[in-house]
Image 1 (cartoon, rainbow, N blue to C red):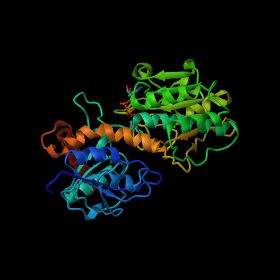
Image 2: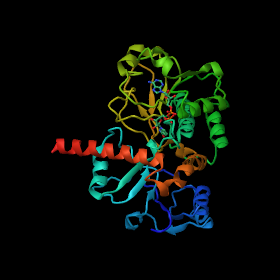
Image 3: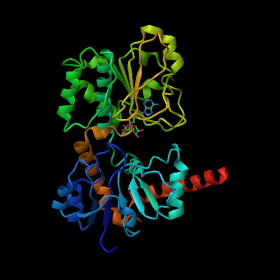
Image 4: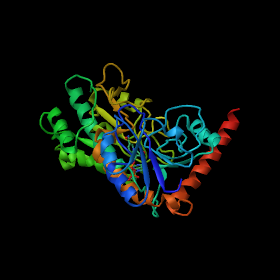
Length: 370
Ligand SMILES: NC(=O)c1ccc[n+]([C@@H]2O[C@H](COP(=O)([O-])OP(=O)(O)OC[C@H]3O[C@@H](n4cnc5c(N)ncnc54)[C@H](O)[C@@H]3O)[C@@H](O)[C@H]2O)c1
């Protein structure tokens, strides 16, 4: 590989329409001397022709395994489950550094193949902040889905298929319409309100017309007293947007919900953080990730109590795929431009160090299982 190269793989997760590289950022990388290979993909929000037009080299769908092993592969979400060793360098969200379900199996594939994983969740700037994240649009879309679920519940219905919106305005008007013209009168509580997802959730609630006093914004200061919290039961929609880094008392429990009886206001929980399989999940009232085709899962709250739905979709920003991809990819660009010097560029050396630590932990875990 003489020129710096990146290979954009297609996404395999159903409904995932976002891309780690957009035509706009691909063009900037090509202008900086990169070769960009792009797998043809009908699922992606950007047409193949948009990449071709800026000088990307189009290759067949799902062919990255045949790329030379010195070509780094970039994508967003997890690779399909398999035992195949991974010899390439991958830049992606792998969701395996926080001991999520199957974490050691994923890292085992890198160990056996000799490949390297740069996890996008752990590319940090000098202040320890993520260089690129989808948070804002995740919170925005999660709050929208929560409001749609509330509207459906009020009509005695279950929220049906969610489909990506062409843009933010269309999403805001769709939600307002479902709520009968405006969200005025709805009360929401956002935990993690100072973060990226939290700010997005608050922004959506404002845009659909909630009164400012009806958007309760909590962050570390408010949860320091320790849950479970009665305040969550007193709003219509609770949106969890925290970045979970250690064990904390639960925010909400099933016993607490059942004890509240028929007077409970809380109708919808949106777990944007989606730490569903994390042993420290602070919302232990559900145990599956929901999907765009089945966006809600009911909580067993007893037959006399009002219903409670949970939304736990782990790829919410894809409801706004174009804007979310453009923002993410633009934020990632400065780091990608440094990628050819990854043996000395801090953002990449830190990420590689973390990968090696996690790889060692996974090897230990796997040998303990034997
Ligand atoms: N569901 C999805 O589609 C999706 C998409 C993107 C991100 N996420 C997830 O959302 C989470 C938040 O991401 P982000 O980018 O907004 O993070 P962030 O770091 O920008 O914000 C997290 C916020 O949570 C607060 N916080 C942490 N612990 C808390 C606690 N115990 N009580 C109250 N507040 C607390 C922090 O102070 C911060 O303000 C992450 O877990 C991320 O993986 C989910």
